[in-house]
Image (tube, rainbow, N blue to C red; front, side, top):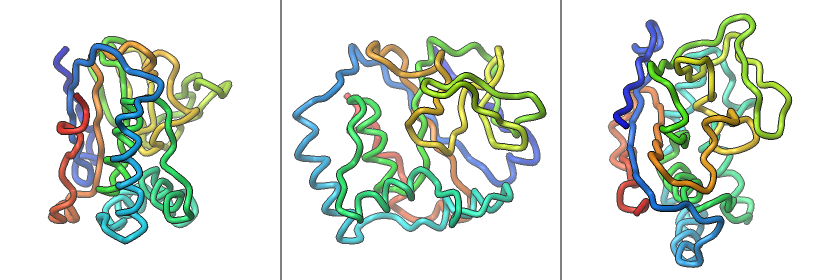
Length: 203
């Protein structure tokens, strides 16, 4: 499934989205083959070998969000690992995206493309916009950056992976048509580590 996301003005002046499509036979709950590379990535993070946090913070500020009070998901992962905690293990697809996100310091999202209905749009939510989260009764989106498909909102792209995913786009055991977009403020894209490392890690 070819996926295109339209960014509504004026957001298109400050946001770019990288989009990667992967057809996976199956997403496993845990793969021991990831243990060593994830542990090595955690050591790199603690040694400071990661991209800077400025791009994600600039994105938040562009939408009137204080990133020191509401952390970008990539920075939350960074702080977690620097406290000595491991990267969270959810499933193999999510684990790889969190690995990439913490290193390049950009928020990643993960979606089952087969569960989405075009057109897809990135815009601010309006009054009454929201969705049912996996473990929450409702996620309210008024004034907040969100992704919408033909049936309504399904994700806040800055959340990383957790309980606020919309139920119908949540990536479970079937790995068909995974898409992993991330957004960042354009002027900071010159950092050479702001590349997509995901293609070599999602196989």
